[in-house]
Length: 328
Image (cartoon, rainbow, N blue to C red):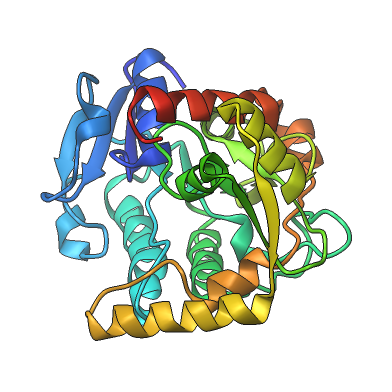
């Protein structure tokens, strides 16, 4: 990527997207952040980005927004919803709209980078997941991200594309793992089930590195890469680093999966009665009860990807940010 080139970022006001926007601005690119008119723009304050208002779930909203764009980074996505339709509307239909918008307005696009998820592959089992394995997603979220990938791959012969599959992404500004840090601060390390599980994580700056490399790499269109940290971890190892970062001791509590499933069902029923969605669902519980380890060898070999943040460094920086900003 070169100075002055234009990049469109969906979800540019969000957790990962805002860090990517900052990096692209630092590199001298013209960063266009596609955001809804009601979006919270706090993470973009002070950044020299161009705000583009619209919703990619509405095809007509994209007219004129992709003309002259050199790169698209599709970071936005629905992580929770009331039913399949909520996930499909954003992660499948929205992705299709973007792809079709590129075909109509940006025929010279240099790269479409789709930030998918390891959830699209499904759990890893006893061995780390590799990109070529058969995908078996467990959740509406994972299935919708996989179908979003299919929308991109369907046009790979005419739109140069790369798909990235990070596991859970964490770092400053992340709200998803905040609850775990709070639990540790309170003195508790909750573990789902009794079997030890392994997982990879991805610090947000490593994901940004993966996005930048994917945009420039001379690789085959439609290539898919796992982007994560170097080693897989047990939850005990993750909690140990959280305890060290927060300078506190926490007691491990193993919670039977059946009990958590019951609690998740209650969460779903309460959300449904209120006409809202919740991230604490039975699908999410089943997902968290599995192994989520992945192999990053392909990204290393073809993209030149080298993760910088292990969990010790990443968790310490995340905890520090939470404390300094009053989140913990």
